[in-house]
Image (cartoon, rainbow over all chains, first blue to last red; front, side, top):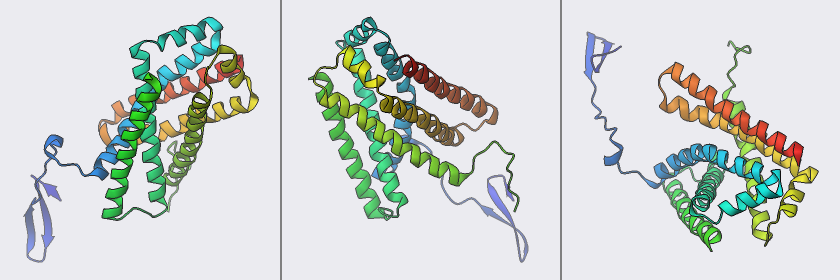
Length: 142
Length: 115
């Protein structure tokens, strides 16, 4: 039984109270996150971000297919910074979600599950993502 | 062992497989669309409309949209169960997010219908 921040157990000499020994630190700003933790949380964050980015993507897609005027309107938006930034953000977030997803599927097959290989694959995923983000930026702005 | 078949809840194995199959379809579709933009120097209205009037592209797009609905239903449920402790709030948020993905699919269907 857990009571008053300690475990109350039934030992051979009657009830024993065990104080909770482990310190709990949930202050994320003071926790050093290894590459695997960054890879993991980024997969979640990019997944949620993509879901909301779809609102813009599906709207632009629908509008651009509605009529030649709608197409020109959406095309015109892409001469401005805001639409370009949303497009770059969506492509970049999608890139990480796909890279992280492929890593997940490889891990499902039993590879990269050890400390070293897991850390290496996480680091490589993050580096690949940085490269993809730069390439997407070059593609959209140049 | 009691298996509750009447429950609306999916089981873990089903979620695991559905999440990965839909992920593969979504990855293929993403690469297809990015590939189209990379290989088409000047995307005109005629070319853009021509792409989506192709029956195979319509089917692929609808498959991607339905996959997105299944994928986000599982993925967002995983995120919500981890971070939202209050069951009522979690149910409401889950409902709103599922409705959003349904709207995405419905809008997509009618857009494809009209092209």
